[in-house]
Length: 102
Image 1 (cartoon, helix red, strand yellow):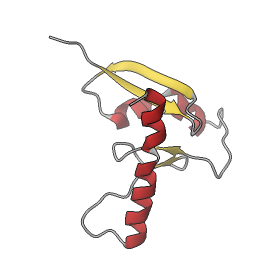
Image 2 (cartoon, one colour):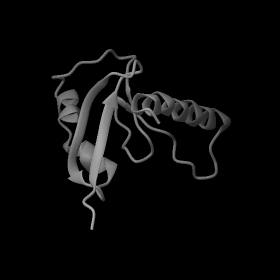
Image 3 (cartoon, helix red, strand yellow):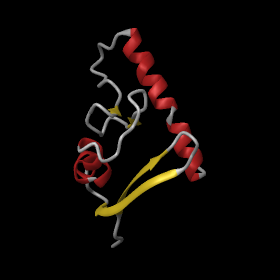
């Protein structure tokens, strides 16, 4: 039996790795790991300050927060603008994939 670990990475749009969290069993949900994240706690407490026009980007597994943009849940009734937002947000994953060399 293989042991799997969950890995959450925070990278910049310049492909710099800011933080890697590799401490949870592979079956953990993104949201639960994010809730315990030291980065999230530091952002909430304002220990880490980011400009108001900068955000972290996450996929649908993460909760929406003031500093974390996630896609609209596609319930089959998205407006054209919501669909476009989701497409643009999804396209940012290219940076993540390039950082890993995928």
